[in-house]
Figure 1 (cartoon, rainbow, N blue to C red):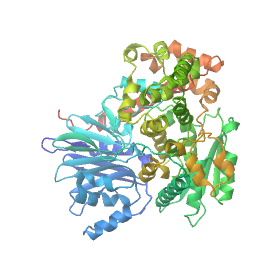
Figure 2 (figure 1 turned 180 degrees about the vertical axis):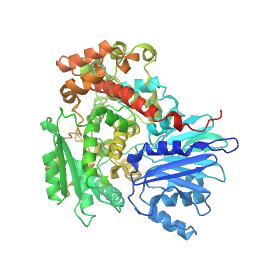
Figure 3 (figure 1 turned 45 degrees about the vertical axis):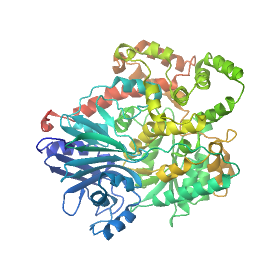
Figure 4 (figure 1 turned 30 degrees about the vertical axis):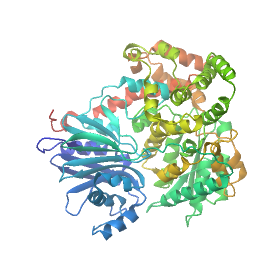
Length: 635
């Protein structure tokens, strides 16, 4: 935390700083580092990956006036270090974090624009009494902050802010509304009023002038182009960018492996790793035994055999209660209604028994059109070319259809990218909201999803597929997929790297024409083309299965005697403050007896919210104990 304005004073006691830092020991079990001075307190936990012995944080400049810490990895640190040495800077380690204070001396707050990697960074400039916080371009690493009196408090996790004793556990009801609509809370909101997520590609500057956020990188808008016959060129360019991103992410002084689902994206990642590594790739796979149609373990074994990997796998069951929901939500930090979290949490635990770093194929679907919603968007583009009377009549009929068909109708009838994305992604309509919402939640206008999506969409052109990809990459990619990805892996002190989300790969994909992303309902068409000759055709051409994405309905039925009844059907659930318990019980009953299974994601959202309210929040608040109070805050 840092003080803004006034005469510098101690801002926190050392034991409270230790408590805040150690609440995230899982992010860095190898080392703790702190720096305390008038007006500033920095704490960091280190997961040692590069220069295991010499990488102690915080790092300072030669004159000890600039200090830096980070949670993350800088893949171009060697090039930056060589440049800075040429300018007279001295270094005592090979650790990537050490370049930060020296780069700040050269570039000031713009230093972050030189970095290639994933990171949450804090730099303290003693001379100017300035703190600069920065989050990586895609939001792979989290960064929370809050303003308390004349202090700015920041941390990689929400629980660390709460451990300071300076953040009140007051709920943000609009954030809860967004959770029930999307299954996650879009940034910059968090579940708590007055606590924010720093958006991807942004820096926060706190100095005597106050606090301000600045955008240093914007997610690239889709370029308007048509492929013609250029698929070979685009595929070749994409593969070259991806291979460089993979090669950079092999940077490690500790054991390294790969998450292998058996799908196209992870298989291609393993293929590129195998031809850039001298030793066999260690691979890790997981599946649900109950979901035979979606179990990809056999495909993962095929890829492991093809590339001679050191392969490890795990099979779970819907009825398995080995993963405690309270522990899972503790690590998630926010309620996220994504069943993939369960699988990835278990997969990370498996991988962490063998490696410290793992590469993953996550992100390709969001860049290149891998989901059903992307097929739908491509179809809408063709639908809109039909005569007006046909499209208007069809959309009107579909909008009156039951269940999931009603969502399709709303999507078809959408007049702009914002309403279309909300129709595709929101699991809460006005009728369901009226049945469920009570008290202060019912008083909201229900338009929060539209406002969030509109802010992200900006003035993007209304071409259905490119617009959908552009908006969703700033929405669900960041605060759903990347959020659970980071939390579930770091719960086991495992660093997972995502080469598809290297910002240069992302920028390249923005130039790939839409008809090379989804062509005649073939998703990720250009990526499949790029993988020919590297992967077997059956892996390239199989349908998208998803990482437990469709398993919510079966899991909820299997867990009726466990988590669902324990939390949702309790006689006095915490959610009853703003949701009707009888209406929730009705949703659960109809889901279990098969009368209406269309609300599985809503039920899962309420379940994760209840676990967060009843277990996470009390536990996090309890860490700010009376004998570890911070120094008083000045208004």
